[in-house]
Length: 314
Ligand code: ADE
Ligand code: ZN
Image 1: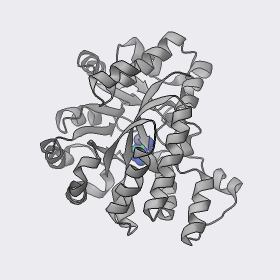
Image 2: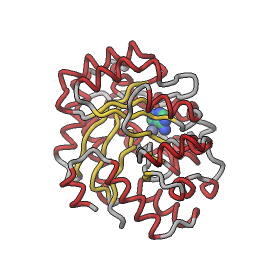
Image 3: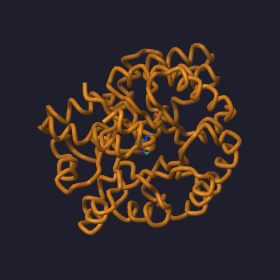
Image 4: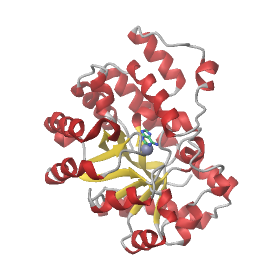
């Protein structure tokens, strides 16, 4: 098992069909079906939006501290078995607020599970880009009483048509609070989204970034500045941003000297956790042990832990 850091994992994307059914029963919420095969049959996507539609439709089953605790504990137990030593976990508080769940319940449940896990962890609060910059600013304001419980902010949800620039002010506010900044860019959006995330939002890492490979000048910059890219191979295949894993740009990213690492994104939906991603890279893309080790080393270099922690893991 290759020890790694997982830096691109949405906790809501670890909601397995079994837990979906269990939480729906616990909270008296009706699902369209409780048949696991029928539920799993819906996990077949044509693009990012078709996935997001199901992801958001499933989330009303999360209601209490305990629900968030159970979800997070299940992910961390699985991640531990996958060799994850460090997890920087995304969460989407706006979804839960819109489902009338208080932000305090979200923080309590998730951070309770983080405390009880042997995996080194921190939380990154994501803004939903399709809800716009004002909603993002309101969310940051609501979260600031819990400032010590998260280390950074991110930007996720529907990318195309929701570029980074309008979020400049809320990212500035986050920076003033000493928060780390990351953003999804170049998943479905083009190289401009990546450039603006760097230049306008001042992000320290790019989540996905695969479409940056279409722009040679940007690739040179990502290499020169060693900007980390949290790549999610099985996610890209599941959402059809690439046709098949053997077409993925990850080997080209490594050849270009980019600081890319491997992540699972939404493992309950995309057919695998981080160890499954590594295994597929070996079997379907033919990555060598040396390349896989480089990816794991990159993940520790890219994480927001202290230098001392990083040294112990590498
Ligand atoms: N939210 C959860 N997973 C996501 C992804 N892969 N891209 C954008 N938003 C997301
Ligand atoms: Zn993601």
